[in-house]
Image (cartoon, rainbow, N blue to C red; front, top):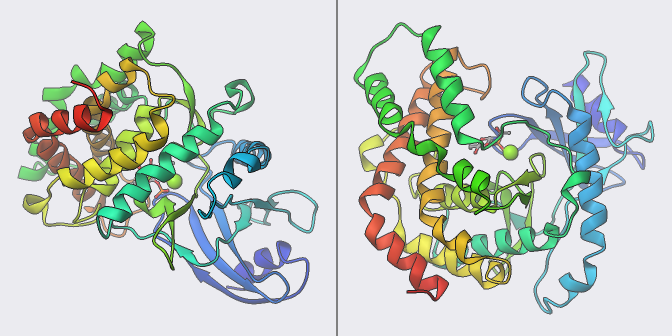
Length: 367
Ligand code: GN1
Ligand code: MG
């Protein structure tokens, strides 16, 4: 605890630190909320350097994003009554925008967005629409950032075939001897879809889809909602902003927001993809994204919804087989259970394909 206070002190140049409390339920980094005397509140995170091998690159990206967002103030002001916030990087007493502790822990701090929160589950139709709007608006704001100046903080992130290759590698040397019904189910799910898993990367190679700056992790817990009026006010967790396909983002937002039981449920048989929430998200998203969405982009909307649920399932399952080397876990079956949830969600998406495709055409205003 003393250590946490020492680190928090580094980012509190105007006074002491009153409290440091764990915050949120991130699967990779450790997050705390710090209450200071001078500077009211801020978020402090220890970056997981097993995942982010070059953490300084995250900071450099964040500084560049902050700067870019500031240059978009005139667009943000056009939102009129709508509030839109940009999480900013705070400097440590050393003058640097990060702090390395005596155990080589890599820390950074970011501003706290007051009067808002990021629920882990979608509450209602308005919330879903607001999540979609936030993603579209965020992508729009960063759309003209030169991707040459954005580091790739996590090479291979969201490149689904690479996760499938990695899965096949770890399957050979799995540290899990169990061959339960759940393990067999997961193996079959991956085997049956391994070829289709190239769908977005093939489209990118053909030039049907283009690399653009993306958020990378727009799950509901990263979308801040104003406590007073229920409108979205920010996208947080900018660690994975990098060149990618906007479809990774859309698929990730949908797989997170349209799963009413959430990622951590163990009621696998009850996991359902909520099509009506998907309609709301698409409505919110396309209210902004229609200006940059091409006809080719529309062609892959269904695939991205199905694919990112599949991909996250593969990532969790591979991590379970490998012995939990990537995602933080609370018990030995945690990653297996998380994989089950994503695969059940994907099957629910597959079962409702016709309806989802018709919503995409409807909302996109196309036949
Ligand atoms: C991880 O750490 P967190 O919760 O922000 C993961 C995402 C997953 C998400 C699933 C860098 O995000 O890709 O979608 O868990 N982040 C990384 O909850 O791998
Ligand atoms: Mg994240």
